[in-house]
Length: 233
Length: 181
Image 1 (cartoon, each protein chain N blue to C red):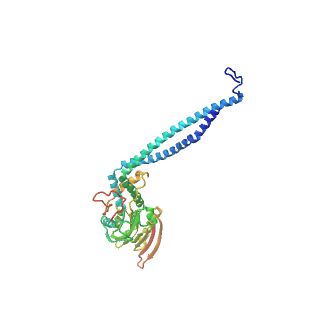
Image 2 (cartoon, rainbow over the protein chains, first blue to last red):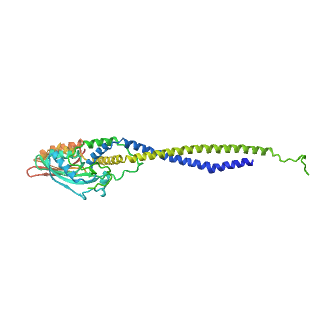
Image 3 (cartoon, rainbow over the protein chains, first blue to last red):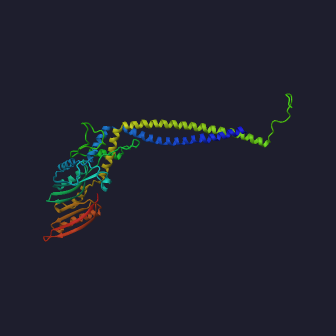
């Protein structure tokens, strides 16, 4: 009887000192395994996506998008686009006035207003005065929405100087935004391009250039490999 | 004095009561069960523990491999993230572009360039128009078309902002409306 009691006591002691902690560690391992599985699932999807991408195709698509909304102000491209628009529409340009140019270099650190925050890009307002027939002015307005670099007409005044000629003073905005500074953590998931985004890429690549667009600086004549380094002008 | 050949008639052990014997037997049986149960739990827990430990080791190794592959594809990720970000911005920009030519077409539907003195569109999409005609009779059809457009739902909030008749009977009016794109 004493032996049996001792054995029972030893068993109970073993239960509390050894078995229960072991069970607790097992549950902890289970939790850790659950988290690991979740992370590995994300990483697998990310690797599958990344390894399915063609970098050259991506670069081409990014180039098309940057031609629409460049990474910095690119005033030369703005002037050349307006010039190109006028040539396409057949109007003559009386003046182009760019306000709030600030620094000619990228203004990624500049504080954004509410509208800019909503858009996710900086605005570069300007005013252009053109002259031509009403049809030519109409063509200018229509084409301005269908070219790279992207522009928006904020408001305009048209004065008719004759039966068929008009002068239009148009206040417009163009857009620019710096490239992302970081790409996030390794375990941050990547989402594949949605059909809407694919359609947008196709639309942008089909938009004509009517001006000169500068692309991210090339290093040593080759393709810029690290888009996240600051652009040196 | 005891000798070797002596027989000890005294009992060396006292008999226990039957009840106590039963309890002792139950205790012994219970101890077998307890020990067996603890052993079983311990063995099962150990097996599960070792299984999970191996799984964790395998997943951790896979995580390290996948992380390495992602770091090797950093160039692709750079460009892809930039592209997704740019697409988001371009989409929001495209959404704020307005089809102003539709507003011009709306105006052209009821007025010719010779009848238009001035035309402006503001940021809120409101059109302000100065119309002129040699006489009121020639101005009335223009106004009628504008009214019809409002009734058809092509414009809204059409208002007459000014009305001037010259000594020679020439009429100049100001109208404002919001074209519906």
